[in-house]
Length: 184
Image 1 (tube, rainbow, N blue to C red):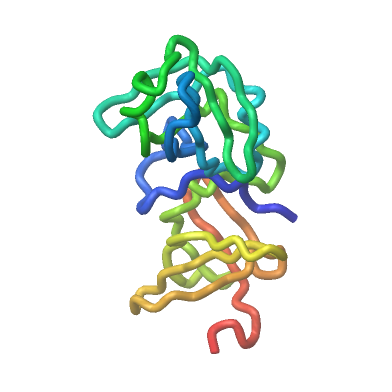
Image 2 (image 1 turned 30 degrees about the vertical axis):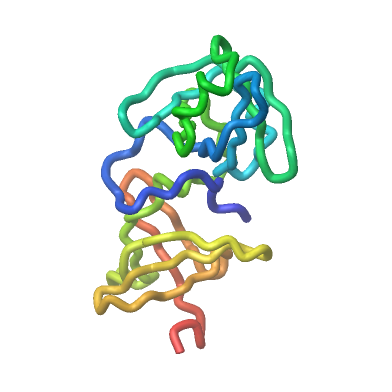
């Protein structure tokens, strides 16, 4: 049972965000205006389907068309339309690449964007407050939810159906079963 799709993790929960981060430009690539992007999405191949991205350089946002996509090791190499030299793209180092929710991957049942889950109230199956979802760790076998409890300590909860009983996105509440030995 999957519970979410990994995308950019905001530090605190506000209202549902309208844009989701899918990558960060790390550096230029070659002299023809290509950039090397570190993907912050589960599946870097999703870049193949994108026609445009929202480029956020910290000073403002602009929608920019993608000319071509290729892959190199763990990076995505992007060429933007109209930016044809290294000088044209140098200023975008460390810029975030975002997509609107309309261009986000389609979620299946019981999948959620981490960005929407961060800050959720976590309660136990008997309705008692347990804490707030602070972050998610990818461990390989299953992900682990980091919950900050009211005493400031952190609890690590495996994202498995035996532990995560319900995720109510509208109410922003996750109901969990605290398995024996989990908090020891």
